[in-house]
Image (cartoon, rainbow, N blue to C red; front, side):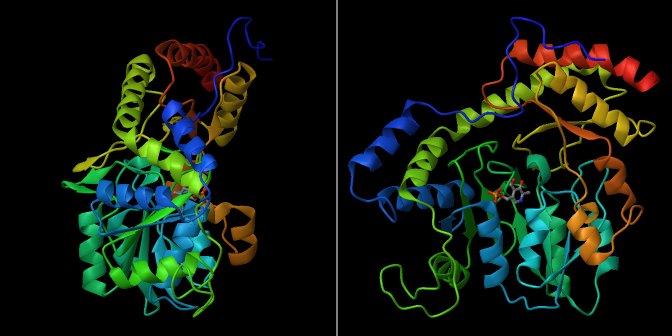
Length: 384
Ligand SMILES: Cc1ncc(COP(=O)(O)O)c(C=O)c1O
């Protein structure tokens, strides 16, 4: 039985947004104006995103999932086509393909970075393969130079699910510029938040126009009631954009604090490094810290991991299994008949990884508390 939360120690959340007076001021500016949608903050947010990501176009939408869906719809992909993707991600990355009846083909991951194993992609290509959707998982850039070569060689579309990677880069190119288009997500646990929200970045003017139309009910232009295609309401509101502008102005500071928090975790957990592994960054990449995920050794079971998560939670420390394999989610098993053993590296990793509390404002004292609980619990847990 775990001890309850000790007195005088406030719970530590798994994640927490970082909201300052700047966000409050900008939202208040919107509320005192008469423009609650398609106003100046939306325009500003989009140009700030394009500038930050080094792209010609940025299209703000209502979520990261909406961004992915628009990209999949806008690219030349049709029902029955196959797109190679990773099973170690948030479920939205492959769901976006299913929305358009495109078949996700899961390729196993690299055990060092947890990103799709580029060496295994080529052998998964069939006559139906039309694209690759790679994810920069936990803010670690995928191997974009190799992915780009492969996509060019086989004439495939290339999508970057960068929902977890704003601020990352590889070979001096920011994440957001690689592939045909990239998606970003701004849920409150992300590097920046707009409450809910997302963005598409691309250098392709036609694709950008199509995404602008798709997010706004398939209109020909944002103002006229002329609907030239089937579209969606994936608009980002002016209040969300106002929060986003403030967050983007503060991005460097937010990223630096996240990176410092990760350093503090590395130090605090150094004595446990043989039982708590962490993914490596891509060799040529700059990581943007999204979550702090650790992995139990291979001789631990998913039950051990779940017990550890429970013990942390019992002590008021937010923790969660992160990520479960997409192909083993009940819906995917039922729909596609996936079974355990299909993607061994992903499954080995997914059964043993857990996320620890991580956000820009986490204190060293909180990190030390997490490390102390782990030091106390792990020997006992792994011996059982
Ligand atoms: C890799 C990845 N893809 C897609 C999404 C979907 O973003 P949203 O929750 O904003 O729809 C997320 C968000 O959690 C994500 O982490």
